[in-house]
Length: 586
Image (cartoon, rainbow, N blue to C red; front, side, top):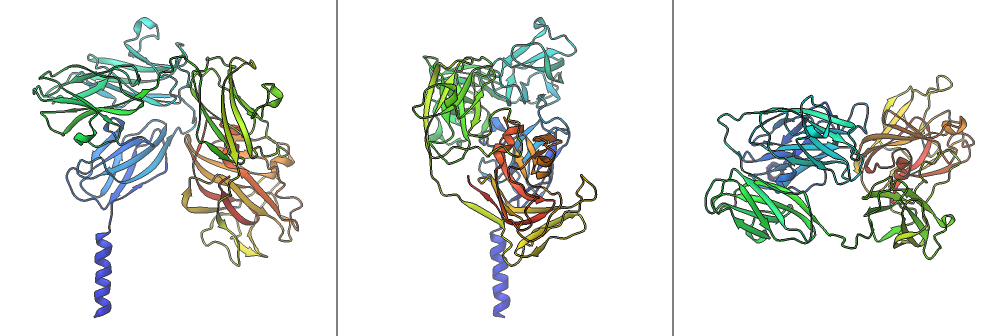
């Protein structure tokens, strides 16, 4: 009787601790697919809701891309999305407190880097603003998005409305409402009239439509010395309807209000607010002295550099040895040959003192990574792994291929202990998590190592494949390490690698000594990035164990310089006697 009571009690505690869970059916979607999301553990409240946001954005309503009410468990299907990284979030009872979330990416079926421009709806009513999402722009401050009549030429006289992207590669604009008709939104690079992407949409006349209140700022980005101009439409007309500015992501609680004004009975109109300090904000509209949010819009305030001098910032103050150094720059001159480099602290500007450098490629604002392989490296097996040793360094910025330094920023590389996560140590047995994908031989433990049998059926083809999925995807450790060989046998052609999620979609990255044997350089085909090995993994390894160590993100930037790793999901191999497979911090 006592045992039965304990069992019932445990079941009751389990039910009390049940929580909302979310499961996206796929981690990677194509831009032609709808998004399917499964929810369990919902509260049953009619005001529970689920929404898709850009990855890492605040929960501000202005960042919502698509949403649905979610009062019950089930599968929710969202419309297809443009290229990018996204997060699905679940909220209870009309709140903005996240109960559960999961991430996914959208990539093009064949061309990952294709520019896209798309409106949030294919059809709008004539009282609605037009929301335009764009991806994979060139990053030039003079890239621009414009709305034209459908089928019109790109002649400037046909432009109805337009905006510069201000150097943003991915982003979103809101355009004012349009009369009934057929339109197309088009994307252009660098003040040209060459169409990079376009999307058609329609404006229909509203019929018996309840007008929704909207609030927007005149600009998406302000400087600290500028007033904030707010446009509102379709307010209730009550004298105590009001508009307020809040910190982005904050609740609507009165204590969070920064600035506010009554609309004084106006249904449509404009309000001006005093300038604000640097930060992320949202402007919000409410009816009749309530806190019932009717509309919101996100905007940013930046520091205006009065003397127009270059700005250089780093992603951290101190770096561990061999880490990549991410440099964000602003106010560069915009020449294709403007460049930024790393020097030893105190060294002259002579080019032979440069440790690593990159062109800004005409961008006035952007981000580069230094401390990896030099730009346009022809990566062969003999190429040593680059990296910064302990010491003092400087980031220096130059205009137009000169050695006249425009800006200097100091940083340090300090000794930090390497932290590792071991996924296979072959200590008396092998991990039970190995997945035997193909080939005639299962993974086995032999002579103190993991033995994966390559099945080389001709001079070039290996039919074996093995995957070790990580129970939790690794977001912080991006150095792959393993030992190869030493088990008393020669292993035919095989490769080792990792499955990674990047900001541009999923990638399969592999290292293969076969490329060294045939003098094949690093290459990319259908999202598979193949690299030669600086350590021979196949020949002379029967009785000679070798250590292999590669910084995964540095190799990614050899073939995709503007891409970044989000997380590493699994290790894979097509053969080899392997041991001590791990990911390390640096």
